[in-house]
Length: 443
Image (cartoon, rainbow, N blue to C red; front, side, top):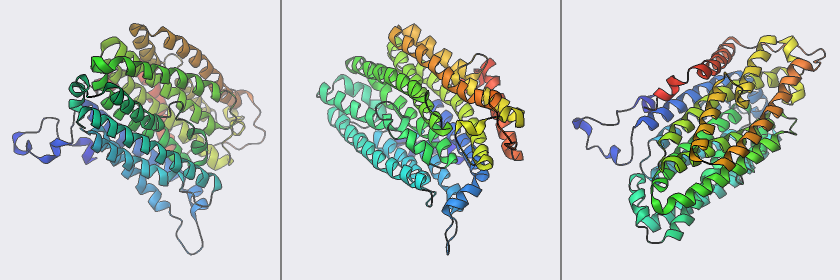
């Protein structure tokens, strides 16, 4: 909370000379993502409380504690890393902050030590995450060697007079590989389906929102000077557009045949990363800097937080009470628990981009930015991807309302969970009519 409230971006004379300001800033973007990290962490902790019975079952061992206590402490460390990352002024500070987030996720993914799926997910995430970290560090080294600076504020001027443009572009590409892993962009997305399915549901929710936000806030900071520099704008724009198109197509098309709900949400997460990359590319093409795309990406992530965490709250209760995460485990939910099914329907509709929801506004901003920038190929691919998204989300809705649930018992929600789902669902509808409060936070 102290990091989120923090000092003002322009400290008064009494502490204007503190060494802190050499590597830490507190502008509107930092303030927004600090609040984002805090809200995400609080919701994940609330979700973890409901999930403690399953955590205890798969961590308990004779002669030792079940270890659920540490599970509630770890997200706080990830939250601190996300907050420091939002305020980083140089690549070294950004890297250390990002690694604090990543190492915490390594532990959270493999936390259920007596569950084979969780351990397998943890090993895959650790190996591929370490590989992506290598790309990131190597890329930072190439960028530093080409520009002579690690300060994000100085990169634009340094890029204009880089010692070797090919070396600088190579470094940028390597950094994008590392960040692409964090956000789940193709072809760095290979870890997402297995890790999302095997990890504890609260961890999957945190990964889906927190890892993506951490990757994109650093991407916004890192790419802004290169999109403003004449020498690097064209190649970086091309890279973003290619990544966006590939990620949109793969994420949406691969989600269609899925029968496990968590795995479906994994591919959905990849698809949403594609829309965010499209916004970055469109903002670069339209204005040569990224103020427009910064607001669109931040708004999209905020609405994605509401929709995705809400879905995971409901998924966790189905996992606890029906002991399954397949789409068929939602059969008949509309009859046995109609209000819960209605909330999930609204949240899935928002993820698909149905009008009158916050998800529609987010996609509308992305499409508007892309059309204004003349990225017609990207717009066409995004429309196809959006149509595919309607189909696979509809599979879950069909299971709830039109499939026979047999004698399945109703799914009841604890009081706090019920309140959280209600707030998230109503917020998804509210911001579909009135998006200004979120946008105002970025001014």
